[in-house]
Image (cartoon, rainbow, N blue to C red; front, side):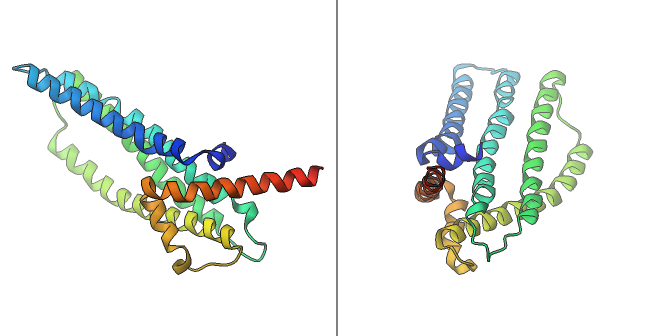
Length: 208
């Protein structure tokens, strides 16, 4: 699976991570507004019914997004110079924190929407306050995990590219390109493809 991400073309990843989710949102919002405009008293359950697909799309999107990050951070470790040490265990901890958080939030939202559709009533104020009190610290921790993952992935990429120990100033550009991945993917992924191709070339020479 890691090799598939490393060898994937930029347009393929862009379509999966950005194109399909945006298209889904456009279709969903268009359908929703169409129902509201065409009906005098639109049924709220029909509108909420559309949102039940949101967690599924979110999980698929995050699977591709985090899969790409994991493939760069872990898949390129074998290309790291021997004199450079990367803290992969620390990365794995902070990598899975936002992944688990987003998965749980997506399931929770899906369950809450399903509950509202079945009962016709929303959650109580106390329940909402309690959930917010739990979500805020978890959300902040998740954000830190995402930023650390961005940092580690960018550092790994630049270390492999330059074949030396790098500081943040040297991979700050890659950090922001990964952050704004819908732009950066067009620049970073072709370089990753070349790194993967070089590895295959070396392996073929060794076999021959």
